[in-house]
Length: 254
Length: 321
Image (cartoon, rainbow over all chains, first blue to last red; front, side):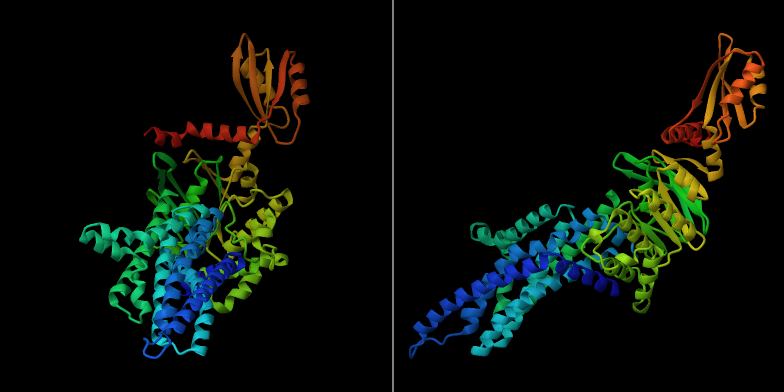
């Protein structure tokens, strides 16, 4: 456990020692701010129109917070490859992989350390959005539970992206290649159910199940469904397991 | 302390290490000598648990590197060919991280890092980023990292590569100091380095051990190669008898006899010019001196001779078998 924390700490420090952390946090703040602002304007207009007597009540959770976060997940698509692309590639390129693999730590400890390190940066990134949400709590009265479950869902979804990014980074010593493949893989997971309505029901169910964003929906409504939990957690576990295999294979090949 | 038995490593069809066996006793410095691509790095990587062997086994301090990797790694300090530094960390941060993953306790880390930095003389660069260090400092920080956990075994892959002469001398001195407390395996492709630092030498070529020797024996072979070639119009036995008595000569062998001319190779004490004495001895007997030239081999030639000579001895026998 202490080794995992040591490596996670080193990873996190590495992000902040390079421009990566700042670029990632900055980009996220900028884009999330823009999404938030534009949807707030939209929500404002809607609220004005609906505000008359007898109209349906406005719900800040459903009409603002949820759309903001669902839209904001697209930012992760661009930003998380930047976080994961160097994890293994850089260690391989610079030879520090030899330090890690000859230190008295297990491969699993290294992988979990790297995963937690990247998750740390991702959590810091999500923390930026607390400002916006905070303003809503200050000026309005959203329900706290759906907001909380949204964050849980986002962390799990980010965990899927990060674990997959780690796996891809373990394939190559070239960061750019790792980043590009990771981005493409994320995008595929994103759009995979677009063709769902054109295929047979079995395939449709599979495609919908694979779609990483579909599983987030319930979280944003304030529901933690075990089906989605199982999906996210097994996705993460499987990716990390494959990463372990990949590192091990690399050992054999040299 | 280190036992390597029948180690073989294959990458696809290419065999990098072929049936390598050797032992290193506690406190010994073993030199691993071979040309580039001989399999030195691969052997060291197997020894340090970086990669598994295809066949054979290696034990460090009694622990098998495959079956009990964590225990073996705990007792091994490794300096790879390229020092494994995180370029955006300071030297101190880097060593603190290494200390942590090497399992040093929270309380002892700081003191240990400080002590090691002083030992390899990088303390003045403690707050400099690793990426901004010169090659010499990088190498020393890499060495510091290997020493951190005070390991029983030190595996150093070309520890002097890329250093300037002064740094090379310092590093060799440091390595010699480390022996005794630590068991050291170091690789190099530089012959004098071996004779100056190591107590025993394993010569590896094309993945095979071609010789295992003490540096004394190796040095004498090196000296033997610093020889003169003499051609005289005398009978071989007579010439050998006479020239063998010249002061400073350690050996004389007939290498060629043709048309009544005898070619003799004369080995002599290193660093002494015996050509005048040889010429005088020949002329005194009334023979004709037809040729007298020093046979100077480059280090590469010496190494090649060494490996070819060894190829005729039992090591080659196993190859045939």
